[in-house]
Image (cartoon, rainbow, N blue to C red; front, side, top):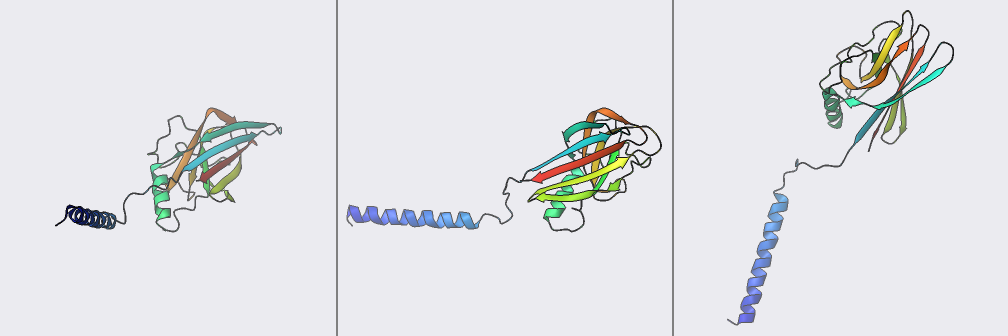
Length: 187
């Protein structure tokens, strides 16, 4: 056999082998392999106090901490399970301990005094952008407030999604209003 023909036949055999190997390796990739689409969640909580005399104090905005249960809520929503993703409830509290992703409820959450957990106003602000807002009025006693949290139900220890902490704590007098707005966007 001629050297040119031998080189040509060898090259064709090698190319066929590479093609078969390439096809095998593509088809051998499992369907459920890890693929990242770069989905990113960002959330902030903004607080404002409206004093009885009409003075407005802007307390600023803080990034929130998504809890471990919050991550499970996102995973469940992505799997299509209804009910877990309706994050429409806010609560406020006065907390002296650091936040933790392991938190299952907002520490020292108020249950009375006009500061009880509430069904808040949910607003879609565009594709992937939402807000949750409520304004409490202090009813019967001075209260010190510095935390807020999102749930999908108003009872404690039920699907606690995220929490935010601000400093310094705010002392609210009877008749003062606390306005909290959570903003979150997914990109």
